[in-house]
Amino acid sequence: MSQKNIIVAGGGGFIGGHLVGALLEQGHTVRSVDRKGFDDWYQVHEGADNVVADLQGLDACMAACDGMDECYQLAADMGGMGFIENNKALCMLSVLINTHMVLAAKEKGLSSFFYSSSACVYNADKQVNEDVIPLKEADAYPAMPEDGYGWEKLFSERMCRHFREDFNLRCRVARYHNVYGPHGTWEGGREKAPAAIIRKVITAKHTGDHTIEIWGDGKQTRSFMYIDDCLKGSQDIMHSDILEPINLGSNELTTINGLVDIVEEIAGIKLERSYKLDAPKGVNGRNSDNTMIMDELGWEPGIKLRDGMERTYRWIHDEYMAKYGG
Image 1 (cartoon, one colour):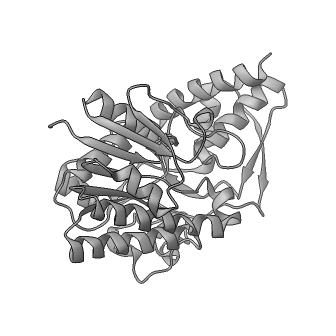
Image 2 (tube, helix red, strand yellow):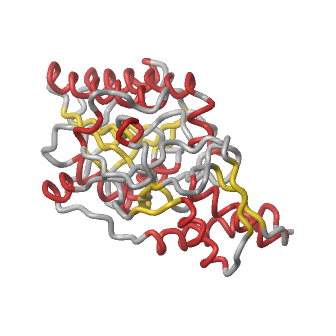
Image 3 (cartoon, helix red, strand yellow):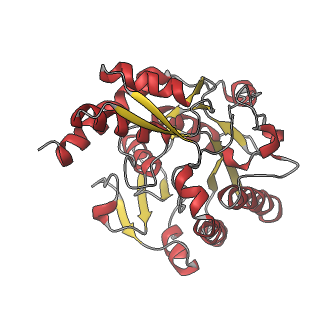
């Protein structure tokens, strides 16, 4: 792979921080852009051109794309289900970032544009049962995505399609399914289920209060993709000939209760469970159908859920103890 000038929009975020590191290791010149101050970036890589800028504005996007060859557009105002369900307007405003970034990519003559979409684009009627049929790419239509966040993602997918068709901008779109791993949000309200459960288990073990609150009835089913698999799949899709949005996720299905079981085993503890039935819990069932990506790219997840959760547990445990262990 030849050396390129690559911008990672949202480089101060969880996935973006990991991606910047991977691209630098591969020998690319990387510009990492995020609106948060450096102290709030999950990872700051000294080898990158690190820029603080609000990419909701077109001028900022034009400056960010200047001199670049490729763009990975990961920037978004988002979080776990608790954040998504309670901040629909903020999630929708991310459409400004997507619109201005793809426009800037066209105007600045970038060769390729990658957009990170989400499994939240899928029709809710196909996700009402825990025993879910894995979601194929065609299941996004007829459209009934997650309100707010899902609509913004689906709209931006279509925008990428039309920029490809009308302006010949090489756009690639991946639908992420629940990415997790170290160097991510684990407290504060934006964390996703794996990190939230790990934090709760660590807290219970550390404080001696051996109880855990679970959002929903714990029977919801999900698949979770470890960050290393996400990075490999994203780059494979970026350099592929796949024109339509494609699933990028694990098909290793588990319940939320099952996820708690895994973390309890890692921690060496059993907790009394209480279920907050009125808490945001998302759809009842969601899993990734990986037929297309396997057929097209030969990609499949390499990290089993148990192994990825243990790696994530160790990192969050160290972060927790550094903050609360004294």
